[in-house]
Image 1 (cartoon, rainbow, N blue to C red):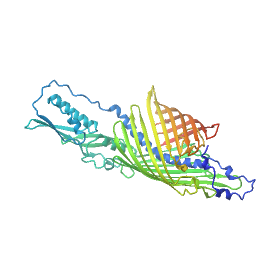
Image 2 (image 1 turned 60 degrees about the vertical axis):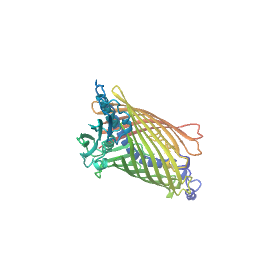
Image 3 (image 1 turned 30 degrees about the horizontal axis):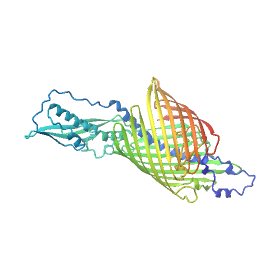
Image 4 (image 1 turned 135 degrees about the horizontal axis):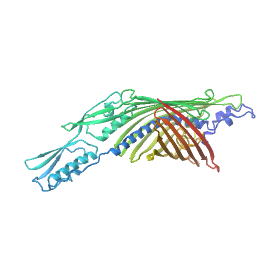
Length: 555
């Protein structure tokens, strides 16, 4: 299965082959029609390594927040008082309220002033501050000669934050913290950023002072601040299926609570005639509620065709780079919401017999903006993202693609954990969608077939300007006393892709697999999948099956 637009090679290639006799095999007839699609697949897989890092960070933050739900303090009512006689006060005067809605509190001022009503007002004020994330508030009482009861609210502020280190940089995690209001969301945001750094396990202690300020002590139960893994699997592009992959994560390389991720891959067979290799870098640095990141990726591949005594090479190279800024603008114990903006650059070059293929050699500049929302559920997390991309492609004159384009994307992941005896059942429901009214280069299309999409296919690519994917997987995990876990799983996927003025391409897949591992020592995965795909105007479905195996060794 392949995108029809990729089949016709440029006329310059055809004319170059006219020198061959009519009985000489045409190399265009011998080329594996999926080779261009595999080039695009390798490119997308390389960028997916970067995107997966961002998703893993969001998941980690969500699960950390979800674990706190059971530990939430229960608001207790104060003891009931019997004294209901009104005292001889002429009124109540409030001062010092700047962080919460003052009229809301003023509306609760009692007309009958006594011990009961004052205690209740005190609880209401403290409760309102706590609800807004301000846990440290003092209230001082004073009676004026005019018998007015003055309530002076002292709002808690941060005096200092101590306990910083090379991997816990107070200035980037809690910028300009001195004198800031003591807010739980502000502290949670900094702790979350700190715990994104490899090896960090940061918690806090709060020490209040009589003047209304508080000292914050950071405690880090640190481990090694670097790690990685080596993986061997058969998930590479055909015929280079056996692939060696490596990853490295370095925590705070510049001492700014920053993170650096390096990834690389290469095929292990057919190095001379067929190869596919690439690498990527992702760097991230926090600044309070802001997160700034940059990435770079490069890959190259080659396939040799030998229809006659002459060898023809299909070669491809790609590179991509980008920067992004993300800001959390709302968070609580139940959600995290952020907005982001970024700039990307992509350049691909594909050649056949040393002639450039314009259809597969785009140079694209793009800008993205979007919103991300994480919801914390009683037994799981729900991650949502919506983004808009505006792009500009160079040198489109000899291609059917639009010079300027706009696309809208949506991702939604619902993950739930439930106990079942000695097993933990995890449901992972995923929706991915993209829409664009423009004709896009393959690098910007959405592919619904792959190891993370519709599973069960060996060498099929099914991508388009607009597409939607539904994926569901159920995992059954059990931990043994020897530290080994076993996790069988079942999955079902369906995807639809559609280019403008063309019929829909549809794919469906089912998979059964097993994950086996021991803590951070080794992880073995194997699965069997079967895929069904249908192109427009096809009466019969194309059926494939595929077995994937991978061994991962963390270090």
